[in-house]
Length: 135
Image (cartoon, rainbow, N blue to C red):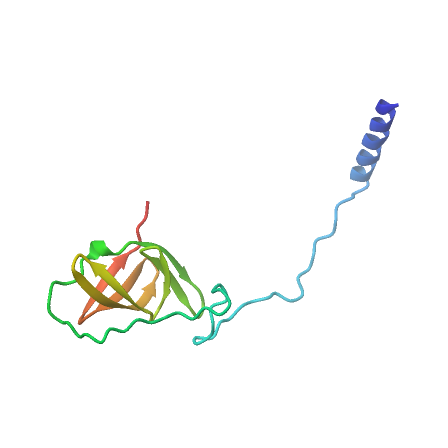
């Protein structure tokens, strides 16, 4: 009885295949897209999250330059309106400021631009170009 059921099922599948049981191709009428405004809220942030920009009241322009080894750039995302980069394990975007402590020095750094393969940072009166780390 089981072999008869299996044989009938197999016969049914073969018959459908021979009759051209191919499904028609789908035609896309409206292709969706996403355009984020420059001052818009990032949709990937949790609800109620507001990025805090840290601005130091100290203007310490003395001391050594920030070392390039203090930054680890692991990922870059370039979208039509916004650019994101993961620097030292934190997601950041153009114009964002953050604080970096290296040894006894505390640096205020701003992300000047995010480009394909590199990020340009501004620290004090200098630019630091951080290349994307590739494995």
